[in-house]
Image (cartoon, rainbow, N blue to C red):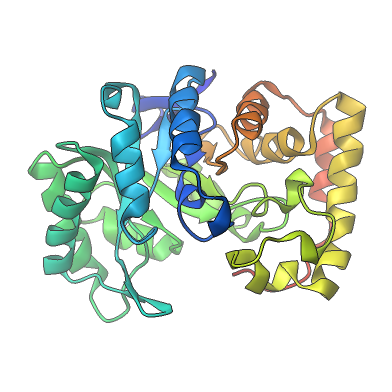
Length: 316
């Protein structure tokens, strides 16, 4: 697989397409959880070069890190392992916790669950408005000095927040939702990260499965699935958003590709520093997604996709 870099153009190479692990054990289709199949998908991802594996302590909570840790037994050196801290599960809601004491405890707990002595990328899941970012990021920097993390990243932040963090310790990567139906980051964050040599890790690059054409109606979303409550998957919004999918399908047919490969190729074309991490627990979908690294859309394809209207429904 083609590679891109974490930590600048001369940083650590990773596969151009990574793997988001959240849906294997959290949020999506809970009745379809199958740890044995997910483990096989993780192993196959490494074989295919999709070695950036992204998880978080809050996914489950904890069960996703445990799954990834078990799957990497005997394979840890083949993976670029990324996890996150800064969200805490409590009842039906998540709360932010950026206190240095929490970060120090969280990294040790994550390492135990992941069965490793370090992670390759440790990320702040969300900035806690009650704690100065500099204090939180200082605790994150301690994990690097202690050898518990190689690189640090931020998730869902503004350019100004990246600048503030970088004054304390280098920012190797920023996670942001980026897809054909979530393009907010293209105005400011995308060019900023490219200029600064910061990787942009694009989560939900397939619009949470919508842009892959895996649902034909809102009712197709499984019971208990997080997407049942996502404004873009409700009946009215779903129907309106099909026009986005129709355009993706048209380009895919013209180029002999799948909708998922086409949507991912558009994300990859946003810049050489962009690394999409589509999530899946399906071996066939994994192969489909990884093959997108070899897709090169024509200028007229990109122009058509760039001109698509905004998605209907709030991002969630």
